[in-house]
Image 1 (tube, one colour):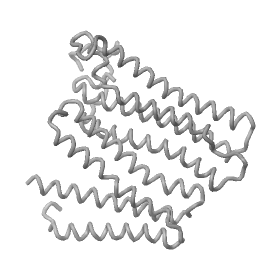
Image 2: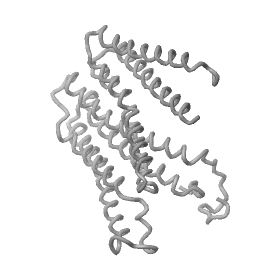
Image 3: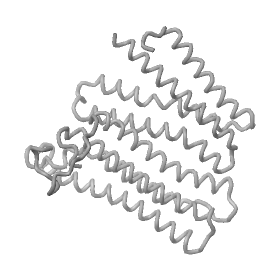
Image 4: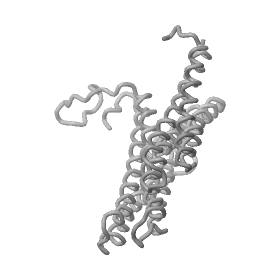
Length: 174
Length: 131
């Protein structure tokens, strides 16, 4: 840390990460758990709507669309090889500008992910808040938003924990 | 603890496994609702992705550098998904009043016991293999 270029103006003491391999595997497990938690939040609202619903409003296909967008975004983001992002100048095989393509595909992935989250907020507002439904019905929309937020968080955690091991020495600069 | 008899370890693990199965089957049979049995399935297949992906990454010499790590990470990701699913499934069922609260607690405890037994058993095996 002391030899590399400094990030902050003042030397801020950061606690050292215990061991990057363990942090990495724990981060990957945590990302899977967050994904599952988000998925189950949404599935819980769907089961609740089917089994124990007092109102006429149900979880329909409209509610599934943001989740599907987020899922596609996660798949796209994680299928891009992260090493291709910055290795354009040093060696370029398999095409002229792989990094440019990788950035484009990655941008589409992030757009899908953010679009899923935004879409869940849109569904929450337009379908549940504007008609002024009472609490157990609004839960369908809120759980949808929580689910997409957790999917996003899972993607972030996975990205960070995959970068932890790649940069052994200056992993704290993340 | 390190010098414990392997036979007694196995007996303890088997007892814990049986207790876990007992809890889950009771949580189904007492209320005549066999949906919590899915928890056993989820926790039983939870160690599989790790095992498969580690074997795959160890066997393939061409995938040493970057893709082998990706395969192992994928296995861990799926494992995390399955374990949290095993915990979240009874919660979702209880929230929709499909199963009651006692069934929820019994199935979660039983599932964790089964999963813990499997994990301890595989760690135990890996220890003896390396000697």
